[in-house]
Image 1 (cartoon, rainbow, N blue to C red):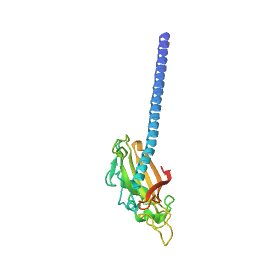
Image 2: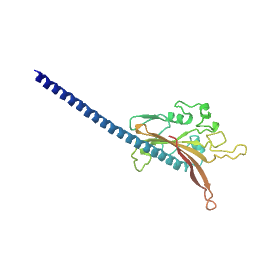
Image 3: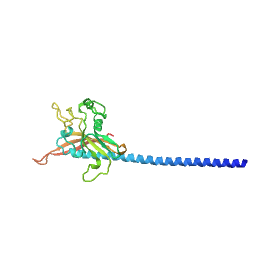
Image 4: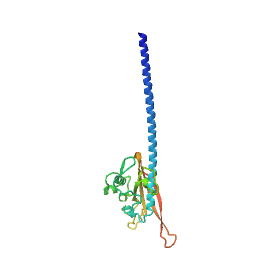
Length: 243
């Protein structure tokens, strides 16, 4: 009788050990799967972040190219002229490839007064650490926007990003009128005349978002011969990543 009980006890211990080993192996397998999926997600986020930077830079370059063909930037600052790269009215929402949406007015408001609701006149001229110029604070006007895949008409860009470019008067101006590209006040020279600021934003999968800003100046070059029009050249004075 004792021998039978001992044998049964030994079989029970073996079963417990087998169950523990199985549980351990399952835990190790689950950890490996979790680690693999985490690394895949990290790599995908890294790739999306870098693609967002390139997408924002692409719409920045497009906006610069289109601004070079506008003789008077006041027409851009007051919204009279927009880029040729535009997918309709600068209002409403846009759907991204992953099913999420972005709202163009909300993006504009966030740029102008750091809130998603409509900006009041007081909000726009408020002096803050980010916008310390008061009445000369940039007032971002939508200039170019659309799916990056549609930017080139001749060939398709393989990208799921949506891009926007805003243009604003350079805050170094002293005329207190962001809708006009510079005029002298009481005989004082206006340091911001012929200078605008471009804000480029890109939105994409996995909540990827990048914001770039550049300052663009118009340089008037004397004509090579009498009677020929003045050639206008552009120069990027600064470029920075905000987000």
